[in-house]
Image 1: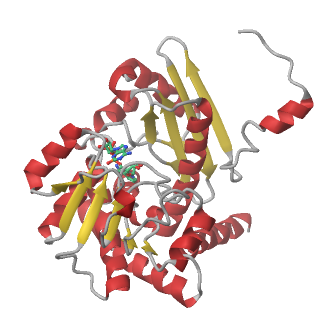
Image 2: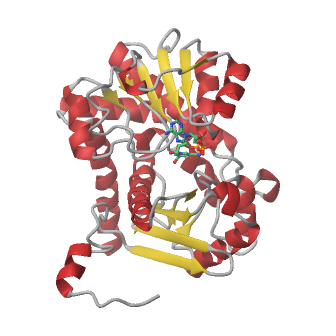
Length: 367
Ligand code: NAD
């Protein structure tokens, strides 16, 4: 590769990391490359005031490196606030591996990634996210102790997705209580977008409660599988956002609430598992508020997974995991009330509480 001479004017224009739109005072960004295994990864450590930065690893076929960097910056920041609002002594971090998990993920690549995680000496602790499995974390565990989400047979808390789904279900119930006056979801029209690990488990809770569930996914195979298991409807149209529904549950990827979709939305409640659902927090949070759509902040209601993996570090059991996850109901209601009383977006109300907890700890640490 030739090295080009870049003028300082051009460099200023590029602002490769610290000037990125999604950069928000992240503490450390680590670029990992290994020619032999084809590993190209970025680890983002956003904030470690409350504890080590814990967050999953996502493997995704990003269109380019900017997309990957943007994702890790946004996701790691989200983890900081997720742990803070859930009351966990953890900071925020996340990792992305660039590539197609279906064809490029190998045990060698995962081990090499684990070595990079290990080199950070515990400032970052990984877990699974999109494109990762419990078995992948077991592989990472072979080379570093700084990993959670390993299988139960190896002393871990196992797959976090069912717990995440339970927390989302709790958050959805709380948001429904706030919006409709009742948290019973029977006969409510709920659209679940993305029926992967979390989406499917959420569908199960919803069906058990008697909700009318419609599912969408880019995988036809998954759609058929979930329909045959739970008897739900498959969405047949091509613009889910314009559909009449009571509740929209984004459980695929982030930023689905954006300039193109937000004015079409007919849902009265948004409550789902995907991280960073609002493409632009302030702008889109405000539009939802103005339109009277109750948005249950993603980082608040999808915390079940982190509660589950935190158990591995703190040695608490299933009962405590479920108690903490169930409490998402109370926290969500408190935040929705707080937002209403103070005329804030729900996202801001949640962020304020998380930020306050971090600021208090920072002051204590300085004493
Ligand atoms: P997953 O990979 O198992 O499932 C994602 C599903 O979304 C897949 O079935 C995929 O085909 C589908 N999908 C992708 N693009 C889509 C699109 N444009 N439209 C419809 N469907 C689409 O992932 P998961 O573990 O179920 O996680 C889902 C979301 O929840 C992710 O955003 C993840 O970051 C977030 N999350 C997961 C956990 C967890 O415990 N797994 C915890 C917190 C947050």
